[in-house]
Each structure stands twice: as C-alpha cells, then as structure tokens.
Amino acid sequence: MKYLHLIWASLFRSKTRTLLTLLSVFVAFFLFGMLDAVRVAFNSGGSVTGANRMVVASRLSITQMLPYSLDAQIKTIPGVRKSTFAAWFGGIYQDPKNFFPNFSVGPGYMDLYPEFKLAPAQRKAWEADRQGAIVGETLAKKFGWKVGDTIPLQATIFPTKGSNAWSFKLDGIFRIDDEKRKGQEQVLLFHWNYFDESNDYVKGRVGWYIIQLTDAGAANRVSKAIDALSANSDHETKTQTEEAFNQSFAKQIGDIGLIVTAIMGAVFFTLLLLTGNTMAQAVRERIPELAVLKTIGFSNVSVLWLVLGESLLLVAIGALLGLAFAPVVMQVAVKMSGGFIQLPGNLPPESWMTGLVLMVAFGALSGLLPALRAMRLNIVDALAGR
Image (tube, rainbow, N blue to C red; front, side, top):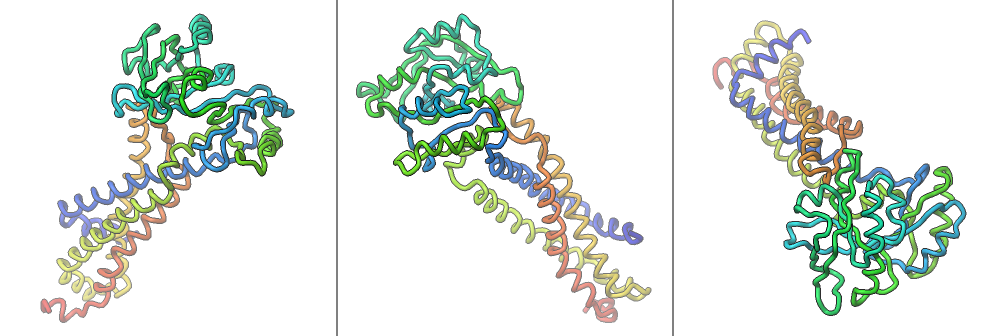
C-alpha cells in the first residue's frame, strides 16, 4: 500500500486512454452482472419442498400436452386441496410485436390464484360466458381495452373451423397488488371448455395442472404420488414449483447458462486484449522512468508489483462500478416493462463472487506480460533508449 500513490499517478498518466479503458471494463462487468444474475435465477428454484402451489407438466417437454382424464385422478391424491388446469394458446393480437401470454384455463382457476383481484360481478359474468375472457390491468391499459370489448386473436397453433380467427368478449379486468408480480397482469385467460370444443385438432388435452396442497410440508410426498399416476405411460409427468415451471418456458429458446457463457466469453476475451494492450503501451512509454526507479533502489520484484498493481487497480475500478450499477439498471428494466420482465433486485452472492474472481484474474493476466518486461529491464539499455 505504500506505493499506492505511485500506482495511482502512473494509472492516470494518460487520462483519456485510462478513462476509455475503464469504460470498456465497466461495460463488460455491467453486462456480466446482468446476464449472470439472470443465469443464476434460471438455475434456481427446482425443489418442491415447502411449496404450497405446484404445477404438473409433461416430463418430456412443456409443449407435450397431457390427458384431461388426469384431473379426476389428481384430485383423489391425499394432500391435494384443489386442482385445475390450463393450456397454452399462443394467439396474436393484431401484430406479432404485440405478443402477450394467453391461455385457456379450467374451472376454479381464480380460486388457486387469490392474488388475482377480480370484481365478483365480473367474475360471475366471465364464468357464465362461454366465449368470455379476462385480462390483467396492465395489459388492458396497454391496448386501451375495457369491459365489453371484443378481442380478436389470430391463432398460431390451434385453428378453429379451418380459420385462425378467434374472438373473445372481455368480461373482466383483474389486478395484482404486489408490484413485484405486476408482470402477471399482462396475460389473457379464457375458458378451456371453449378451447376444447372449438379448436380443430386437439381434444381432451390440457397443457399443465395446477394443484394447491393442504400442507406445504407434504409437497414431496404429493408430487411423487402425482407423478406415479403416469409412470411408464406415454404422458409421464413432472411435478415442480411454479418458479421452475415458469423458467422452463424461457429455457425453450436454449440453454440459458450456455448462451450467457458464450456471450461473456467473447466480451471478456476482447476486454483482455484491450486491457493488455493498454498496459503494454503504458509500460513502453515509461521505460526510462522504470529504469530510474531501479537506479534509486527499487528491486525487480518491486517494479513487477508496481505494474501489476496498476493493472489490477484499473480493472478493479471498472469492474466494481459495473457490478454495482447492474442492479440499478435491472430494476429500471423491470419498471419500464410494467413487471413483464422480472429480474433479481440485487446481484446474487454467486454472481458477486464470480465477478470478483474474474476481476482479479483479468487484472493479473492483462498486466502480467508488461510487468515481466518491466522487471527484466536493463538499466543501461533502458536509459540509453535501446
């Protein structure tokens, strides 16, 4: 630490170059913080222990539908208080850019989601309307919908009577009080019975079952009993938490961990070249000064650590600022999306630890070769400009 003032002065010898390099390091670690937080979130939440509400889906893929006949069997499992089902629809409103989740749901769906606040009169009207639909408040505001409107959707998977045109009457608008779950207001729900009767191809099939337990402590036992119903059949199931089920939707685009690793690998490789070049240039410009330091008594090891310290400090400043700034932007993204995009409120400890390890590693790697060159300087040759 006694040489910190020398390291600091050397670091900002060329302010423009240093600031541009710091900006590059900042951006790299800022991106790492955001992407790694998403990766950690997607890889968590798989255990059913202690879960009060769980989802039963196909073990093979969430796109594999399950027989409606499982509904009655699931209700007989000890520990199941309530159950219902849903099926992905995937309709488009006016333009593919207007995408929002829409799916059909079975009777009693709203009973399993008490956080969805729907006026009793609107719920009664919806339950009595075969072609009725309800939407979240955020979605209704986005498109200017009001109760009584007709909402046309173009099917992407399930045609009806040879056409892709479906229409629904908006019977109700629900809200969610929890700001962290506002993204769930951007959804449209309609009746599974109407979907089952009207689509041309799929009959008696549902996408997944939602179950509520009498005791969250029995989650493991109940999940095993439910999965045993379909063991060795062509529709084996996997009972999991809602969080894990929701993650599986996004994972359909690919391995999130692999995607993040590939992106960050390219970013950090570029960063290593950039920072290494900055340090090499800085050492070349200061060869006479380093020779003077050796002349007045600095050892080869001391000079080595001066250059390495400069590299470590350069990367550390940019990395810590980038990691600290990532959660701020993540929360801004959540608010701007109306809750549709859900990101962690803070960087997970795992991301911080990985970021700090990368910070030290890149600081050492980018400064190693310039530091070795400085350590091996011959005083006479350096002062003579050779």
